[in-house]
Amino acid sequence: MAATLARDLRTGRSPWMSRPLAAIPSRKLTRDIATDVIVVGAGISGAMVADALTDAGLKVVILDRRGPLMGSTPASTALLQYEIDTPLSELAVRIGLDRAERIWRRSKLALDALRERAAHLGIKADLAVRDTLYLQGDVLDREGLNLEAAARRRAGFEVSVLPPAEVESRYGLARRAAILGHGNLAADPRRLAAGFLRAALERGAGLYTPGELATVETGRDKVVAVTEGGATVTGSYLVFATGYELPKHVPRKNHRIVSTYCIATAPQPKAIPAEMPFVWEASDPYLYLRADQDGRIICGGEDEDFVDEERRDALLVAKTATIQRKLARLMPGIDVAADFAWCGSFGASTTGTPSIGSVPKLPGCYAVLGYGGNGITFSMMAAQMLRGLIAGKGDPDSDLFSFRRAF
Image 1: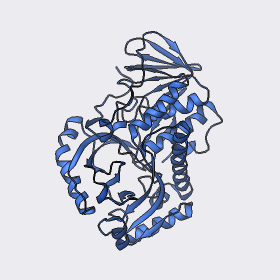
Image 2: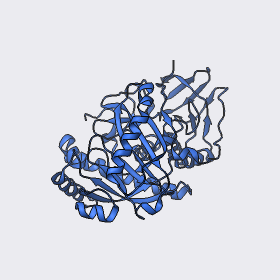
Image 3: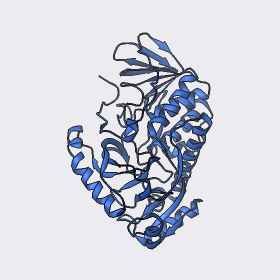
Image 4: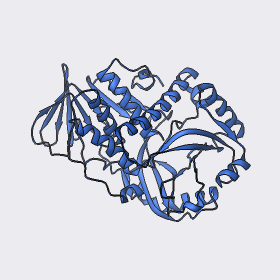
């Protein structure tokens, strides 16, 4: 029996999957091997963690049940933001102002580090800095937006509130007030993950696929990962970076799986503002969109609690039509016909924050649940934190994301 839950993670096709990508070399695991760290998962989280740990001088072996970048990563819309799903003003009420501000600041630091790290490694993944518009909705009305903007300014973020008329004149959007933020990042998620994965492999990391993990055995100062084929990988540490296929050993309190739906329009650069920002709503569920480098609008939302893959997939046609109607109301000047449509299973948490750290009652094991709308930003946060926890002197924010935290 596999050590992580197996899911059919996505259906349909995203624009990233239509673009050629050089094969990433992997091998079958046919013998017992030893390493410093075992990373389970070869998607964006596993790639960033492997890059950080090999950069710290550790030997790393990566196992994946499918193959590199074949899970949820290609289904991401790659709106890489520091703003988390839960408004800062609301999060402060729920967990305390100090904790809420620290979480938001760490998210911004992680996004900045992602951009800087990608530049350092020379990763070409259509990376582009973007502003963000957070639109008035059923979670935050006009007054709520003003309170949220004040909370963000207090925490050190440069934001402003735009009136509905300015939102319409500058961006061609239906009239709604919005918070304007800065410094977020657009990317091709598949190429981004491939760049981090290749960097780790160039430093000597081993990638073994298909590598279905059967059991994890822990002992004094060692972790043994046993594959379905009977081969073992022995290391001092193991990191579960399996995304939305939850490890059976890892606490799931305050986390759940949801289904989300996305479309990409035909290229229409003349109909889109030259500096088109990310757009998302202060609503539940919220619509989110961005432009890509080809002039498409990529738009997603209509989230549903995950039941099973068959029901998720059966809703794709209806959800696509709903997203098109909402997009047409929000951006009346564009053609909303879908060139691409897809859906996938993603994780959500009650606070919009990830869980990162050591797995209770499983010595030497760590896990990354980068759940919420900021999955890739949280992947970089996890890479930084796990480097500190495994190869350094800890991390100053580990208490905020620990599996043992009270919130």
